[in-house]
Image (cartoon, rainbow, N blue to C red; front, side):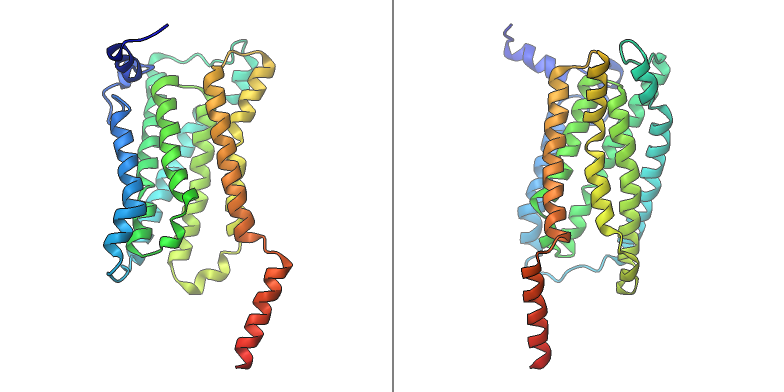
Amino acid sequence: MGYSFSEFVTLICTSKDSRVHDWFLMSSPVKPTILILAYILIATRIGPSLMKNRAPYNLKYTLALYNIFQIIYNSYLFIVIWNETQVIRSLMNDDCKIKRSDEMTLQCFGFGWWYIMNKIVDLLDTIFMVLRKKNEQISFLHVYHHSAVIVISWVAFKYMGVTEEHGIVMSFNAAVHVIMYFYYLVAAMGPQYQKYLWWKRYITKIQIGQFLAAPLYMIAAAIKGCHISKAYTLWITINACIFVVLFVDFYRKAYTKSPGIEHKKDSRKKSEKST
């Protein structure tokens, strides 16, 4: 069935729960879209251009405070979302749905909104890279990941409502970010702490694992015979696959080195020592 332009606008602006419609950034897709486009421009064009002829900023203490804030914020998100998410119980129900009161549902929406706000705060990661002239770290994976997570979270919050697969994704992601920002906090303390950061590769492995959580739940729900939107299942699965491919490629490039490359590096180091 076709829609007129006004009907289409009304459709995309309609929230799953009307109570959240007027919350910050939730009234329509326009505001988050502008935010993401501005972020991409600043990260890839405007920021590096403005910093081109400037010395990098020393943000040691700013980064320390920021990382501590993120550890606390994500710890809170993990605790409250994990305590409310009922994955096993949902699979035991005929329709895979958890019956919640209107008050509890609204509270869950609140957790989801705070999660989206945290994903927006995460964009500061890139801004700090720009200010420190760490442009080599602003990769396609970095920019795509920060942008896509906001889109996926916003769509889920706006159109799908409170579901257990969202709870899995948000709680796992918050837990990973606690670990990740603790790593960043130690790294920002100075080179003398580098020896304590041997576990960096395991963060990437955990990140890869978290992307499989929602699709695996949806597969389990499908096997159980529960009704979950096919379009949304496809949307989540495609994005999960993209994230897995990108992060596996990053892991391979960052931590897996061929013997030939290692041999060349060793030969170069020996040559440099002999001159």
